[in-house]
Length: 307
Image (cartoon, rainbow, N blue to C red; front, side, top):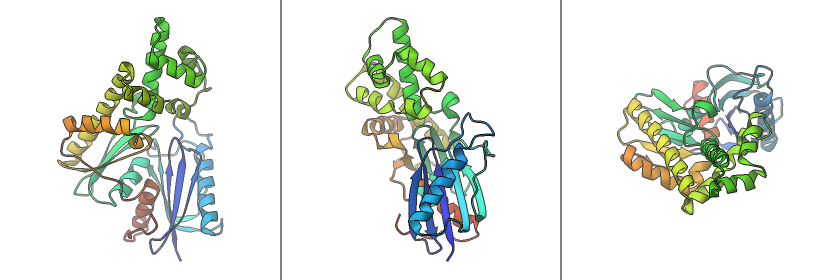
Protein backbone atom coordinates (compact mmCIF):
# COMPACT_ATOMS: atom_id res chain seq x y z
CA UNK A 1 0.00 0.00 0.00
CA UNK A 2 1.35 3.40 -0.98
CA UNK A 3 0.75 6.50 1.17
CA UNK A 4 0.64 10.19 0.35
CA UNK A 5 0.91 13.19 2.65
CA UNK A 6 0.02 16.86 2.52
CA UNK A 7 1.28 19.48 4.97
CA UNK A 8 -0.03 23.00 5.47
CA UNK A 9 2.51 25.21 7.27
CA UNK A 10 0.90 28.39 8.55
CA UNK A 11 1.70 31.29 10.85
CA UNK A 12 -0.64 29.94 13.54
CA UNK A 13 -0.34 26.16 13.14
CA UNK A 14 0.94 23.33 10.95
CA UNK A 15 -1.51 20.67 9.76
CA UNK A 16 -0.84 17.34 8.07
CA UNK A 17 -2.96 14.65 6.43
CA UNK A 18 -2.05 11.12 5.34
CA UNK A 19 -4.05 9.40 2.57
CA UNK A 20 -3.68 5.90 1.17
CA UNK A 21 -3.52 5.12 -2.55
CA UNK A 22 -7.30 4.51 -2.68
CA UNK A 23 -7.99 8.05 -1.46
CA UNK A 24 -8.88 7.22 2.15
CA UNK A 25 -7.80 9.93 4.58
CA UNK A 26 -6.45 7.78 7.40
CA UNK A 27 -4.87 10.31 9.75
CA UNK A 28 -4.57 13.99 10.53
CA UNK A 29 -2.48 15.95 12.99
CA UNK A 30 -1.82 19.55 14.02
CA UNK A 31 1.38 21.10 15.34
CA UNK A 32 3.24 24.32 15.95
CA UNK A 33 3.46 27.11 13.35
CA UNK A 34 6.39 26.76 10.99
CA UNK A 35 6.60 29.77 8.67
CA UNK A 36 10.05 31.35 8.52
CA UNK A 37 9.20 34.94 7.62
CA UNK A 38 12.07 37.11 8.81
CA UNK A 39 14.21 34.16 9.94
CA UNK A 40 17.64 33.11 8.68
CA UNK A 41 19.39 29.99 7.44
CA UNK A 42 19.94 28.61 10.96
CA UNK A 43 16.22 28.52 11.76
CA UNK A 44 14.76 25.12 12.69
CA UNK A 45 11.19 26.44 13.01
CA UNK A 46 9.98 24.92 9.73
CA UNK A 47 11.89 21.66 10.17
CA UNK A 48 10.62 21.11 13.69
CA UNK A 49 7.00 21.93 12.79
CA UNK A 50 6.87 19.70 9.69
CA UNK A 51 8.72 16.77 11.21
CA UNK A 52 6.74 16.91 14.44
CA UNK A 53 3.35 17.17 12.76
CA UNK A 54 4.05 14.41 10.24
CA UNK A 55 5.35 12.17 13.05
CA UNK A 56 2.11 12.75 14.98
CA UNK A 57 0.05 11.87 11.89
CA UNK A 58 2.06 8.67 11.36
CA UNK A 59 1.44 7.64 14.96
CA UNK A 60 -2.29 8.22 14.57
CA UNK A 61 -2.26 6.17 11.37
CA UNK A 62 -0.32 3.42 13.21
CA UNK A 63 2.36 3.55 10.56
CA UNK A 64 6.09 3.24 11.30
CA UNK A 65 8.01 6.47 11.81
CA UNK A 66 10.56 5.29 9.23
CA UNK A 67 7.95 4.76 6.51
CA UNK A 68 8.72 6.14 3.06
CA UNK A 69 5.85 8.09 1.49
CA UNK A 70 5.13 7.76 -2.19
CA UNK A 71 4.71 11.53 -2.54
CA UNK A 72 4.53 14.56 -0.24
CA UNK A 73 3.65 18.19 -0.92
CA UNK A 74 4.29 20.87 1.71
CA UNK A 75 2.61 24.28 1.43
CA UNK A 76 4.32 27.03 3.42
CA UNK A 77 3.07 30.50 4.33
CA UNK A 78 5.33 33.07 2.66
CA UNK A 79 7.26 30.49 0.61
CA UNK A 80 9.24 31.96 -2.30
CA UNK A 81 11.13 29.40 -4.40
CA UNK A 82 13.55 28.20 -1.68
CA UNK A 83 13.54 27.27 2.00
CA UNK A 84 15.10 29.80 4.37
CA UNK A 85 16.07 27.57 7.30
CA UNK A 86 16.98 23.95 7.94
CA UNK A 87 15.37 21.46 5.58
CA UNK A 88 12.84 19.02 7.08
CA UNK A 89 13.86 15.36 6.94
CA UNK A 90 11.02 13.64 5.06
CA UNK A 91 11.26 10.14 3.60
CA UNK A 92 9.42 10.29 0.25
CA UNK A 93 9.95 9.16 -3.33
CA UNK A 94 8.89 12.63 -4.46
CA UNK A 95 8.75 15.81 -2.39
CA UNK A 96 7.84 19.37 -3.25
CA UNK A 97 7.60 22.63 -1.32
CA UNK A 98 5.26 25.37 -2.47
CA UNK A 99 3.27 28.37 -1.28
CA UNK A 100 0.36 27.54 1.00
CA UNK A 101 -2.02 29.36 -1.35
CA UNK A 102 -1.42 26.69 -4.01
CA UNK A 103 -2.50 23.83 -1.75
CA UNK A 104 -5.45 25.84 -0.43
CA UNK A 105 -6.63 26.49 -3.99
CA UNK A 106 -6.18 22.83 -5.00
CA UNK A 107 -8.30 21.73 -2.06
CA UNK A 108 -10.96 24.41 -2.19
CA UNK A 109 -12.06 23.62 -5.74
CA UNK A 110 -10.58 20.10 -6.15
CA UNK A 111 -8.54 21.28 -9.13
CA UNK A 112 -11.36 23.15 -10.91
CA UNK A 113 -11.13 26.84 -11.88
CA UNK A 114 -11.82 29.26 -9.06
CA UNK A 115 -10.32 31.57 -6.48
CA UNK A 116 -9.21 31.10 -2.91
CA UNK A 117 -8.60 33.94 -0.47
CA UNK A 118 -6.75 33.10 2.72
CA UNK A 119 -7.62 35.49 5.54
CA UNK A 120 -5.81 34.11 8.55
CA UNK A 121 -2.86 35.50 10.49
CA UNK A 122 -1.67 36.68 7.07
CA UNK A 123 -3.50 36.96 3.75
CA UNK A 124 -3.07 35.97 0.11
CA UNK A 125 -5.28 35.32 -2.94
CA UNK A 126 -4.75 32.70 -5.66
CA UNK A 127 -6.82 31.88 -8.75
CA UNK A 128 -6.89 29.01 -11.23
CA UNK A 129 -7.94 29.86 -14.79
CA UNK A 130 -9.84 27.56 -17.11
CA UNK A 131 -6.64 26.73 -19.00
CA UNK A 132 -5.05 25.44 -15.79
CA UNK A 133 -2.71 28.38 -15.25
CA UNK A 134 -2.62 30.01 -11.81
CA UNK A 135 -1.97 33.52 -10.53
CA UNK A 136 -1.25 34.85 -7.06
CA UNK A 137 -2.08 38.28 -5.71
CA UNK A 138 -0.79 39.57 -2.37
CA UNK A 139 0.96 37.39 0.17
CA UNK A 140 3.80 39.88 0.65
CA UNK A 141 4.16 39.42 4.38
CA UNK A 142 3.35 41.41 7.49
CA UNK A 143 5.32 44.52 6.51
CA UNK A 144 4.29 44.95 2.89
CA UNK A 145 1.03 42.99 2.65
CA UNK A 146 -1.53 41.25 4.84
CA UNK A 147 -4.50 43.38 3.90
CA UNK A 148 -7.58 41.56 5.16
CA UNK A 149 -5.67 39.49 7.71
CA UNK A 150 -5.79 39.16 11.47
CA UNK A 151 -2.30 40.61 11.74
CA UNK A 152 -3.18 43.49 9.42
CA UNK A 153 -6.24 44.38 11.48
CA UNK A 154 -4.31 44.20 14.75
CA UNK A 155 -1.34 46.12 13.34
CA UNK A 156 -3.58 49.00 12.28
CA UNK A 157 -5.41 48.89 15.60
CA UNK A 158 -2.09 49.22 17.41
CA UNK A 159 -1.07 52.06 15.12
CA UNK A 160 -4.30 53.91 15.91
CA UNK A 161 -3.98 53.21 19.65
CA UNK A 162 -0.38 54.46 19.73
CA UNK A 163 -1.43 57.65 17.93
CA UNK A 164 -4.23 58.14 20.48
CA UNK A 165 -1.72 57.73 23.31
CA UNK A 166 0.60 60.28 21.68
CA UNK A 167 -2.29 62.72 21.49
CA UNK A 168 -3.52 61.95 25.04
CA UNK A 169 -6.86 60.68 23.70
CA UNK A 170 -8.84 57.93 25.33
CA UNK A 171 -10.55 55.70 22.77
CA UNK A 172 -12.41 52.41 23.04
CA UNK A 173 -9.87 50.82 20.72
CA UNK A 174 -6.91 51.99 22.77
CA UNK A 175 -8.54 50.86 26.00
CA UNK A 176 -9.37 47.41 24.62
CA UNK A 177 -5.86 46.89 23.28
CA UNK A 178 -4.16 48.02 26.50
CA UNK A 179 -6.35 45.76 28.61
CA UNK A 180 -5.68 42.83 26.33
CA UNK A 181 -1.89 43.17 26.42
CA UNK A 182 -1.60 44.58 29.93
CA UNK A 183 0.58 47.52 28.86
CA UNK A 184 0.29 50.85 27.09
CA UNK A 185 -0.10 51.02 23.33
CA UNK A 186 3.37 52.51 22.86
CA UNK A 187 4.83 49.82 25.12
CA UNK A 188 3.10 47.26 22.86
CA UNK A 189 4.85 48.77 19.84
CA UNK A 190 8.20 48.47 21.59
CA UNK A 191 7.41 44.92 22.73
CA UNK A 192 6.61 43.90 19.15
CA UNK A 193 9.86 45.35 17.85
CA UNK A 194 11.97 43.58 20.47
CA UNK A 195 10.15 40.26 20.06
CA UNK A 196 8.30 40.23 23.38
CA UNK A 197 5.02 40.19 21.41
CA UNK A 198 5.07 37.73 18.51
CA UNK A 199 3.18 38.23 15.24
CA UNK A 200 0.66 35.56 16.19
CA UNK A 201 0.13 37.20 19.59
CA UNK A 202 -0.53 40.58 18.03
CA UNK A 203 -2.86 38.98 15.47
CA UNK A 204 -4.85 37.47 18.34
CA UNK A 205 -6.19 40.96 19.07
CA UNK A 206 -8.16 40.96 15.79
CA UNK A 207 -11.33 39.33 17.24
CA UNK A 208 -11.50 42.07 19.90
CA UNK A 209 -11.25 44.74 17.21
CA UNK A 210 -14.03 43.01 15.28
CA UNK A 211 -16.16 42.92 18.42
CA UNK A 212 -15.71 46.67 18.79
CA UNK A 213 -16.67 47.15 15.14
CA UNK A 214 -19.77 45.04 15.64
CA UNK A 215 -20.78 47.30 18.53
CA UNK A 216 -20.40 50.34 16.28
CA UNK A 217 -17.04 51.78 17.34
CA UNK A 218 -16.08 54.22 14.63
CA UNK A 219 -12.33 53.60 14.69
CA UNK A 220 -12.68 49.83 14.61
CA UNK A 221 -15.25 49.98 11.83
CA UNK A 222 -12.94 52.12 9.73
CA UNK A 223 -10.10 49.61 10.07
CA UNK A 224 -12.40 46.69 9.30
CA UNK A 225 -13.83 48.37 6.20
CA UNK A 226 -10.35 49.25 4.87
CA UNK A 227 -9.16 45.65 5.21
CA UNK A 228 -12.30 44.16 3.71
CA UNK A 229 -11.90 46.47 0.72
CA UNK A 230 -8.19 45.62 0.41
CA UNK A 231 -8.90 41.89 0.30
CA UNK A 232 -11.81 42.35 -2.08
CA UNK A 233 -9.56 44.35 -4.41
CA UNK A 234 -6.99 41.53 -4.43
CA UNK A 235 -9.76 39.03 -5.21
CA UNK A 236 -10.95 41.23 -8.09
CA UNK A 237 -7.40 41.50 -9.43
CA UNK A 238 -6.96 37.73 -9.31
CA UNK A 239 -10.27 37.24 -11.15
CA UNK A 240 -9.20 39.68 -13.84
CA UNK A 241 -5.80 38.05 -14.32
CA UNK A 242 -7.37 34.58 -14.51
CA UNK A 243 -10.18 35.84 -16.77
CA UNK A 244 -12.92 34.63 -14.43
CA UNK A 245 -16.01 36.83 -14.63
CA UNK A 246 -18.20 34.89 -12.20
CA UNK A 247 -15.71 32.84 -10.20
CA UNK A 248 -16.35 30.37 -7.44
CA UNK A 249 -14.63 31.83 -4.40
CA UNK A 250 -13.60 30.12 -1.18
CA UNK A 251 -12.50 32.29 1.74
CA UNK A 252 -10.36 30.41 4.26
CA UNK A 253 -8.66 31.18 7.55
CA UNK A 254 -9.69 32.34 10.98
CA UNK A 255 -11.18 35.63 9.79
CA UNK A 256 -13.41 33.78 7.33
CA UNK A 257 -15.10 32.17 10.32
CA UNK A 258 -15.81 35.54 11.95
CA UNK A 259 -19.32 36.72 11.03
CA UNK A 260 -18.43 40.42 11.35
CA UNK A 261 -15.50 40.13 8.95
CA UNK A 262 -17.44 37.90 6.58
CA UNK A 263 -20.26 40.46 6.29
CA UNK A 264 -17.78 43.26 5.64
CA UNK A 265 -16.02 41.24 2.95
CA UNK A 266 -19.29 40.29 1.26
CA UNK A 267 -20.30 43.96 1.21
CA UNK A 268 -16.94 44.93 -0.30
CA UNK A 269 -17.21 42.19 -2.94
CA UNK A 270 -20.66 43.40 -4.02
CA UNK A 271 -18.94 46.55 -5.20
CA UNK A 272 -15.66 45.03 -6.43
CA UNK A 273 -16.72 41.67 -7.93
CA UNK A 274 -20.50 41.22 -7.84
CA UNK A 275 -20.35 38.02 -9.90
CA UNK A 276 -18.31 36.11 -7.31
CA UNK A 277 -20.04 33.05 -5.84
CA UNK A 278 -18.78 32.32 -2.35
CA UNK A 279 -18.62 28.57 -1.77
CA UNK A 280 -17.43 26.34 1.06
CA UNK A 281 -14.13 24.60 0.22
CA UNK A 282 -14.41 21.02 -1.01
CA UNK A 283 -11.28 19.98 0.89
CA UNK A 284 -9.10 21.70 3.46
CA UNK A 285 -5.58 22.79 2.54
CA UNK A 286 -3.70 19.68 3.79
CA UNK A 287 -5.91 17.52 1.56
CA UNK A 288 -5.33 19.96 -1.28
CA UNK A 289 -1.64 19.24 -0.81
CA UNK A 290 -2.44 15.52 -0.97
CA UNK A 291 -4.23 15.99 -4.30
CA UNK A 292 -1.11 17.72 -5.62
CA UNK A 293 1.01 14.88 -4.23
CA UNK A 294 -0.96 12.36 -6.33
CA UNK A 295 -0.45 14.48 -9.43
CA UNK A 296 3.24 14.87 -8.61
CA UNK A 297 3.54 11.08 -8.54
CA UNK A 298 2.00 10.90 -12.01
CA UNK A 299 -1.33 9.61 -10.74
CA UNK A 300 -4.83 10.89 -11.17
CA UNK A 301 -6.04 12.56 -8.00
CA UNK A 302 -8.84 10.46 -6.50
CA UNK A 303 -11.97 11.58 -4.71
CA UNK A 304 -10.89 11.70 -1.09
CA UNK A 305 -12.87 9.79 1.52
CA UNK A 306 -12.96 10.81 5.17
CA UNK A 307 -12.29 14.45 4.47
